[in-house]
Amino acid sequence: LRKTCTLDVFGVGLQNQEAAFQERVHSLLAKPKNRVRLHGGYEPHEVNRLMQGVDWVVLPSEWWEDSPLVIQEAFAAGRPMICSDQGGMAEKVRHEVDGLHFRLGDAVDLARVLERTATEEGLWSRLAENIHPPLSVRQAADETLGLYHAIRAEKADSTVTS
Image (tube, rainbow, N blue to C red):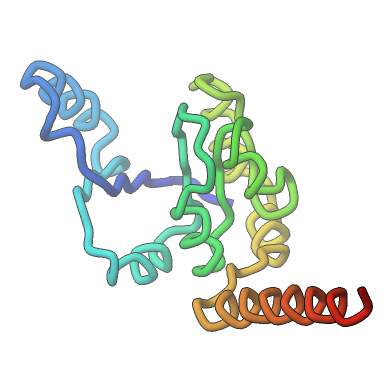
């Protein structure tokens, strides 16, 4: 089990906030020296490499997301997700199967889940082995074409028998 953990934050937005807010965030992050690292933005081709460099992917969105791409990216990289218990996130990430949920907007519950990931023996392995990687573009296209052909054949059969 881990004695220390780090939090790597990827993405943009902090630079768009007011200077006072940015200063407050940086002062808070300076206290747990080297435990929280801001990385800023990244390019799409970097996603898999970045995902491979972390154990868990946390999506603390408060939006009722429909189908966040980051979930598919994490699962493609074999990384369990931690997300809120609402909307498409809760539908895509199966609690206690391939990820964990926390109560929407509840920082204390998120902290409880994060602590659990650092202290519960075997949790990461159990969840990671249940991840179903998303379909590749080729697989999705083949399935879509298969459905199209099946519907077309069914329609043709029904007009012949009418």
